[in-house]
Structures are given as structure tokens and as C-alpha cells.
Length: 330
Image 1 (cartoon, rainbow, N blue to C red):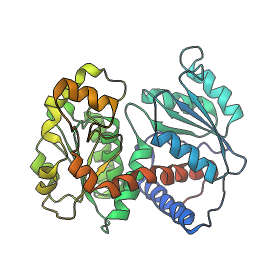
Image 2 (image 1 turned 135 degrees about the horizontal axis):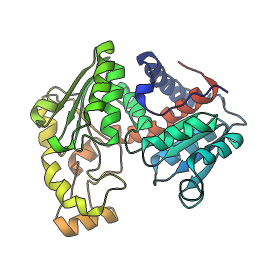
Image 3 (image 1 turned 120 degrees about the horizontal axis):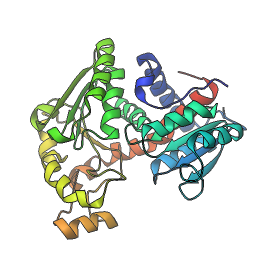
């Protein structure tokens, strides 16, 4: 089997990335029309989750089931990976039993090592550095909600996390106008920016990293954000992070600063826009904050696009599975 890995956006050419976005749209339309073809009958996929998940796990399992494939879920307690068995050994075992392996966990080197040894396609469901299934679904969602070929969007908040990195490089591949907006201490690594700039030189994308909200959001079609403390970071950083990132909240003022009355907000979820979670309540008890990276008002006003975005994780992951296991493109 050809080893079509899905590890990070920068491994794809602009044409290949566009093709995955188009395949996502095609498979979504096929499903909606009620005539979905099962391209993965008899295939098996191992799902390794070292970090918890709602959308990624659900999207992989449902997408695989729609396409006729079977999945096995392996969490940190249900496999030996990393603590009793090395990643190379795990990869060589699973590669003899499964047709593909998904990994969601820690450093990018772990998913790269799986790919080096598995002998089957390895798919990145999230690492500390990259979140390519998220950026692929975001490209699909923005295309659905905006008639422009060249879309302008800004990411506000912790602009050096995996979502920000992926949005920067994916946008460069698409030829979009991309801004990362966050304080100087929470901006992407120089090598990530250089990687995106190299792609942008080919596609004509424009990229900007800034700590100035007004400059960063001007004329944008979409404002993206994410939680202010990523998985794996200690709870003690919340107070410091809130102080750093409060000016970068996606709120009515940030939306108005775009100067675009059609601007939409996006969020990869989970979102802390109310007190409906244990973590949000804990933060409220210690800081008095009822909203964090996005206000409840903006979240609910943009719920349609945000939950389209969540649904599109399934359609775009289905495209990744079909491409990785069959080579089909669109």
C-alpha cells in the first residue's frame, strides 16, 4: 500500500491541499444527497488517543463507519504505547494488523516516528505543534460561508499553539490573507513563520503576525480563536494567561474592528463562553471571569458557523481517510 501520511500541512503542495478541501466538500455533498459510496469496506483503522477528545474521536469513528471501515480506540490506559512499548515497536505491531493509524497526542516527533515504522498511512489527529485535521475542516467551513476565493481571516489569542500554526500554513497553501494576532510572548516560532512564508511566495498568500488587534482584524471575513490554555499545560498558568490574552478576546469590539458587517467568528471547540463546564466554573471561582477567549454574545450569534465547523471535522477527516487509503482525490 502506498504510504500516504497526513502529518502536517507543509507536507502537501498547494494543489494537493486544495484537492483535500475539494474532496471534503464532495464527500459531504454525497452524504447529504443520500448516495454515499463506501470506499473503505473491509479496512481497519487504529485510533491512538494519548489526549482526550470529543470531535476528533467522534469524527474518525463516524467517518470510518460511513465508509465501511472498522476502528479500534486505544487511549493511554488501553495500550502500551510509550510506557511499556516503544513507538517503533507499537507502529510495527499495529501496521501488521491495521490499514491505517491515527495518532492524537504530544510532540510531532511521536507521530513522525509512527509513520517511519508503521508501513501503513499514519494520520495526525493533533500534536503539540500541528492540528491539520482542524485546519482542513476550517478551510472547508470558510469556503462554505464566504463566496470569496481569497479569504481574509485572523486568529486571536495564543498565536503559538498548534491551531495557530496550522491555520497559518493552511492559509498559505490556499493563497488566503492570514493574520495571527497575539502578545509578543505568544507568537509563532520563527521556523513556522518561515515555512508559511516559503509557501506564500508560491501561492500569493499574505501573512501577518502582530500584537495589534485593530491592525490584525481589519477587513477580515472571519475571526478565529481557541482556548487560552492548551491541553497538557498546568492549571496554574490560567491567571497569567488571562492577563496576557484578555485584550485578544473575540468580542463585539473585535468583530466591529474588522469594519466588515458580514464578519463571522469561528472556534475549534471546546469554548469557554459561559459557566457550563467544570473548568470554566473553577476559573470563575478564582478570577471572577464568566467568559474567556470568546464572549457568549459573539459565540451564540455565530453558533451556526461554529457548529458547521464542528460537523465539518467529520467530512474533512473522511476525505483524509479516503485519500490515505485509496488515493482518491477531487
